[in-house]
Image (tube, rainbow, N blue to C red; front, side):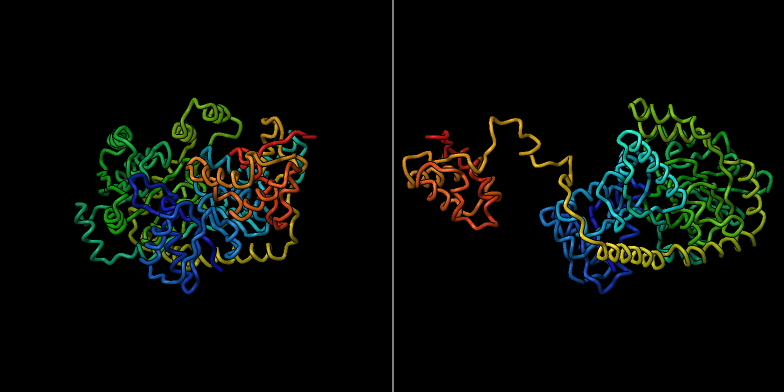
Amino acid sequence: MTACIYFHPDGYTTTGRQIMGRHAAGESFLRGLLQGTRGQDLWIQVDEPGHVAAFQAIAAGLGRTEPLHAIDHRRLADLSNPGLVFHPGPGIGKEAFKRSSVGHRAWSLCGITHTICSERVMDSIVALPTAPLHPWDALICTSQAVLGSVQTLLAAQQAYLQERLGSIRMPLPQLPVIPLGLHTGDFDASEATRQTARQELGAEAETLVVMFMGRLAFHAKAHPLAMYQALERAAQEAGVKVMLLECGWHANDQIRYAYSQAAAQACPSVTVLQLDGRDPLQRRRAWASADVFCSLSDNIQETFGITPIEAMAAGLPVVVSDWDGYRDSVRDGIDGFRIPTLMAPAGLGTDLARRHALGVDTYDFYCGYSCSFVAVDVEATTQALIRLFRSPDLRRTMGQAGRRRARDCFDWRVIIPRYQELWAELSAIRRASPELPAAARSWPARLDPFEAFAGYPSQSLAPETRLALAGPDLAAAQARLEQLTALSMVNYALPLLPEADELAEVLRAASQGAQPARELLRGIPENRRALVFRALVWLIKLDVLRLVANGA
């Protein structure tokens, strides 16, 4: 089955100037989904009408001509038609509260993790135990390491709720592990393309080109110092010329300078070129020209890591840190080398969390300070690079193994069916589950305002509240109502008010003299009485009806 995709253009594009991993993942996923579900109607949930056109353009560009069904917040109940909504993030708890206004079994919710160390994301994860989520919902974790972190956060929240409130029953969504995918064919390059790319970069035939792909942020992606030091040592010991391509982008000139300064000191014999990774042409040039890929991520902001798999798809041997999602994708000694990492023990980072929580440190500093206490083995990296530098056969063998693994395990043609299997399973569980009773307070933070603020007025309208026309007769009341509803400060509320004939019926009944409010609804159909009863207050507001003291 397919799903209704929550679509906001920002979540599915890499055309901006600040490209994050979630942008690349979202764009790649949507392309994979549209290419892998041909013949099925398309469903999207949008916040703004303009987003429909943006989705249509993407779908049309991929040759999709099937009917498109767009659902916005005014027609939320229509989500029961596709039966499942996919959100490109982890914040499905709030969406579950929205769903509760329609019915817990109305549809399934499925989210996915990207970076999980930001305040917003961690807050959304720890909110899951108290949200109305069920076994027919899921939060996809993109790696085993991320699953472990999510479970740690949830366990901490559950322990807190048990200690604070005595809570023992805390249903959770499913937490399946499904990796991100890619379009492996995008990374094929002919030998002629490779030679042209190397010439454009000024790489001589004997030069070994090592590349890093990703944001150039030492504090929030991968600290480059270990790579610089290892490249210098390996180049000297292997006796080869080495060019390093850093294909990415810097957030500002200060970070750009930090990279240049560190490279000049740590790897002076290595030629370092920086390419703008936001430019598709530059990315293709980097992939085509490289001999080895290296990414020594040491940052908690990394969660999956798509670039090593892209490198494998390009046929490159990879040297990566043994870190989070890299551990799931790269087989040590087969596709490349995973370099050991070391982190400070649990209990010694409380001050870092507290400083960030209290606003002493920004998110960037929180990530940067944390990665200062993560080490990548420089000597192991050096030896891995030396082995690859000295052996074209090893580079070729590992590159071929990685390419097969990328195509067999991570291509979207393999991953999309796993999504569909999950969605079908969730929908089957939902349909087979008994209907849940409506909760008395399905969304405590979004109560009926007339309940939440019931203490504000002198009194609330009751069925026994006596009402009468405010004017001398029915004609005068009707004229006043017509006159006042012509005002923009009054008629903005018309979408929430009864029909004109229903209002006319209320005024006709009121013209018979003072009487309890419930009596004014005698001529109103049963299924419309609550709406019309509420509107009696609006008629009093306009001085078309008035309150009458008991006994008057």
